[in-house]
Amino acid sequence: MCLIVFAWRPGHPQPLLLAANRDEFYDRPTLPLFEWPEAPGVIAGRDQQAGGTWLGIGPQGRFAALTNIRDPRQPPRGRSRGELSVQYLGGSLGPEAFLHDLAKRAGDYSGFNLLLGDREQLWLLNSRAGKPVQLAEGIYGLSNADLDTPWPKVEKAKALLSECLIRPQIPSLLDLLHDAQQVEDAQLPDTGVGLNTERLLSGIFIATRSYGTRASTVLVMHADGRRQLVERSFGPYGVLLGEVNLEC
Image (cartoon, rainbow, N blue to C red; front, side, top):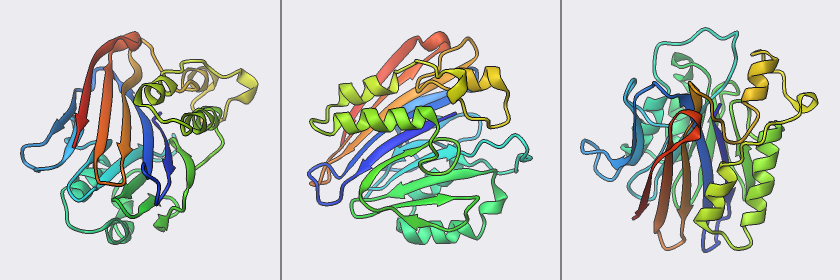
């Protein structure tokens, strides 16, 4: 159950502040942030099982972030959703054109949210809605449902991000991603996975023996084109495995 919170502020010295957790089984092989040799300028983690990525940046100020839509009733589709981020980051289409083209073939994939942008614009495609949407200035939260679905972890992370906007610092953005407090049962959403699993997934940061937050990533985009990208990797029970800090 992944989580992305972000502030989009066109015209601001830091137009984009984004903090994201990727949650996955620990035994799924993964590489941390690096520049992909076959795609110059693309910097992202890599899912070694399917070859795609959940979050990354590319040339001309491109960035992409992906979450799955959680629906236990939906049968899995054949293609990996992680390839969508790679296609955009290494391609030439702008975010609007890419998402309009993708909307025609979104049925090839299980449910997803794909957030794409560059220095000028920010777009989202929710595959269930089927129509790309350009996002206005604001603070947003995205997990494994629709944009700004009021799950407690989404609402809490957005509130914490709002507090960081007064004086944004990467350490404080990483700290908000490490909040492991679970939600009281009465506040839990019902997404069809059972009470015990809902409870397990309710924290911003998840840490168990077999499943949890594998990566916490912060992206800061500056108006002059500079980008700061920091990722912390975690193993079972939330043990810190390493940190990558890049500026480009």
